[in-house]
Image (cartoon, rainbow, N blue to C red; front, side):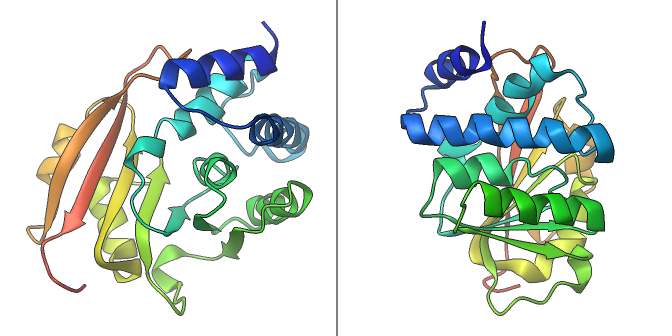
Length: 211
């Protein structure tokens, strides 16, 4: 099955409708990722046959849980889930953050080549990032322990906003270590076409009215 067919089938299985131009942009992103990956090792999935399932569909499985107009993708790496989400939701304002300069260079190049006007890139440590505006959502995929993610990025979340942490197996031990002033709203088991391992999305919000 071609990557285009795999993507189309996967979107259908996820119940996600995307235009042909958006699908083409997603495939162009994977081509760019694979090209840079040969030099910079941007991702831990070297097998190009898994790119659609483990990068695109895995990221797009988060779509039903997006609420709000701005998203910070912490430890974005090769751009997951931020770039696929930005392609699927052009009205969403997305900042990709990574402390690795080579990954930052790739993210900037991807935003330029794919003409993603809704993406900005920040290269630096999340705890030192001080943007003018906080975010409605903060997402992270394989970035850190949940408590560490909250600690490092708390100052970046809007009042009423939430974290969307992507995990493999259900992270009950990590949930147990969360600080008392945040609440786990839900843990969603994600069924990602082509991904055999468990995938979960942990939705967390702050109990406080502010930060």
